[in-house]
Length: 119
Image 1: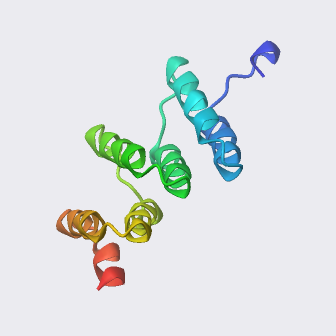
Image 2: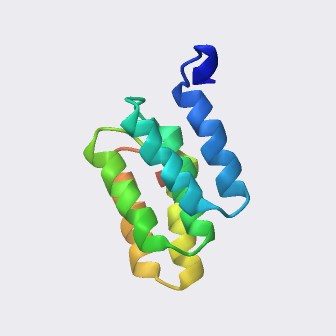
C-alpha cells in the first residue's frame, strides 16, 4: 500500500487484526498492533476489542485484562461486546470473582446497558 502512496488507516489495521484473530493468530495481531502504533496510527476501541476478543478465545485472560486496563487508562471506552467477552472468558475459566468484578466495574461507571443485561 505504502509503495503506491496509500497510507494505512486505523480501519486498514483493524481489518488485518480482525482477520488474524479469527484465524487464531493473536501473536501476529499483536505485532500488527505494534506496527500500527509505531507508524503513528492510533488504535481505537474497536482495535482493543478485537485483541481482547482474540486473547479471550485463546484463554489468555491476563493479557486480555491488561489490554482492557490499558484501554481505560488511555481514555477509550469499551463497547458492550468487549465487556461481555472479557466477562464470558472469566466465567468459562470458572473465575466468577473476576467476572463479577468486571461487571460491577462497568455498572459503577454508568454503563447501564451492561447493568440491565447482567441482572
